[in-house]
Image 1 (cartoon, rainbow, N blue to C red):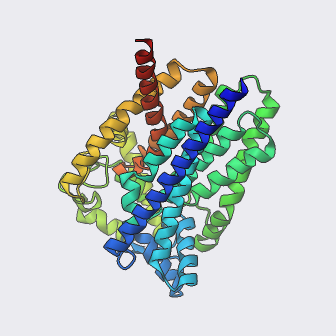
Image 2: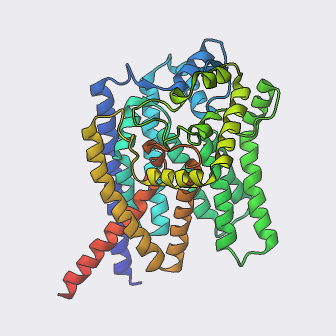
Image 3: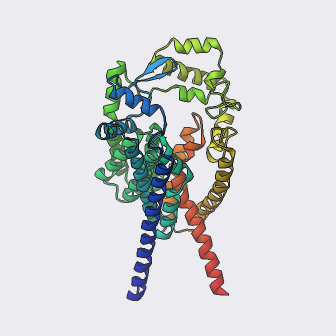
Length: 427
């Protein structure tokens, strides 16, 4: 490449990065402004995490009352202990915690930029990062809610970035690094742990030239590192419950919620009631008479019994939940003003349309290296939506991977723009 052309390209890259830095600065100002204007640091929307944190700080331990029973392992521990640390250091300051949410969204945007740059180019990365920073879901949750959506999504993106970076030189230490991030992600939201089997499957399918010994080392390295990271929580649960708990949490009700005679595919009925409210009094009495692990076992057995008795209904429901994951359920927007949902639907139609176009272009009309990276992105989507659809689906579950979807959207947009420019030049 001529020196002049190289300098021009370098200058263009620096210009893009400067623009990204400016976009990040604007996003920070906007989000901090929302927090200050609406004073959400005084009255944020709290979830079960806050109750558990307050229980820990008051000396009552990691407990939450759920279904008339005291749960000691309801939620994964990462966000809970992050809140405990922040509150101890800042005298229970919500503003600091909301700023940590914002910081993770910035980390997420930069991670998405890095992924897009590796698979496609910096232009795609900059556009994708900008879309993440101003994503309406993260704008809302960062400023108003004490729930770790930006943190969970960051762990998904960070796991992908590391695997993408190391997949072509998969040393034991590199793959263990991937496993560590997956393990931390699983301790933040259990479903992130499903990235591990999908990464393994991807490695087997796309690295056919690797020897059996090398593949075994890679797979075992990721598995071992993931297990080492989550093992303290598993040991803690064994000590607390006096028996081994395989999953990160004890909420077997999540599986039952999506697989029972009253299931709608979401957590609510068409009337806005919880699925549990629809069950008869006798069912309530059975549940309320059990302890935490008893309820877990009961709900799981009820769900499995229902699936075995109604296999075709289960399959139909499963695909309906996949549809809800990528589109909207009848319950979408139930707790928000209808106008918000209408605006978001318009934006999402644009996002999904150009994302599908980007996927088609990446898989069908791109070099082998681009196709390989695009397939890895698709494997990440699959790990989340295929697993989540076994349980129940709400719009916020898609937000976990929408930041990564913006990469395909950005690729589709930039390729269309490039095609139009090329046609104009030909004229």
